[in-house]
Length: 203
Image 1 (spheres, rainbow, N blue to C red):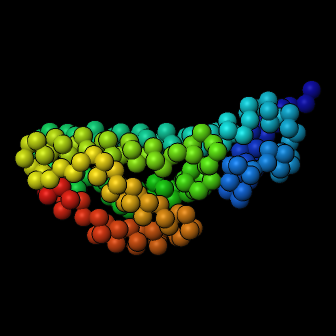
Image 2: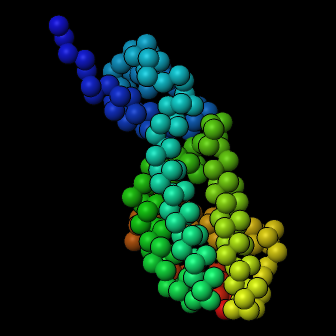
Image 3: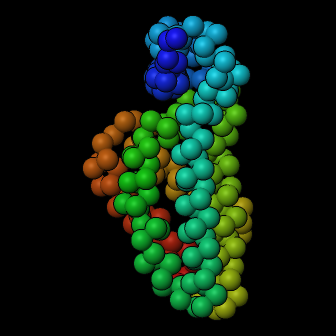
């Protein structure tokens, strides 16, 4: 009896990632993915219900990791704000630009799929959802700091959303253009100076 080919799943995922990166979700072809992976369409459909589930299988582990990281950062920053140690928020290594860029570049292909190739998929609103979540978390933390008198200013939540949209768009731009990690870190230093969050919140 022939042993099952355990390489099929990874071959399908690898071929799908390349197809999505090259053509985007909308124009990607399952038939081409099967051809590149050297499998039949039946083998693909035995594992994935369709293109959306296949796209999700590639990017969802990274999305879950990123969401968990954001929750952890917000929880830690909330503790700092409650204890009036607002200075520790700026010193938190998980908040640093190099740390974020390192995470993104460790998962470069997945992140590029999310911000450049996801139109038509269940992740087509990834950027807006990411900013919305970040806005909610940041506003919650800084409201505590403001009410305790350790932040002088508290922008409206909609205003903060505008600022964070521009901030994250700037951070993600090097990935859109396939810049090196070294360039992204260099530009990140400039972005950090441009978006002076201590000045925004007065703390």
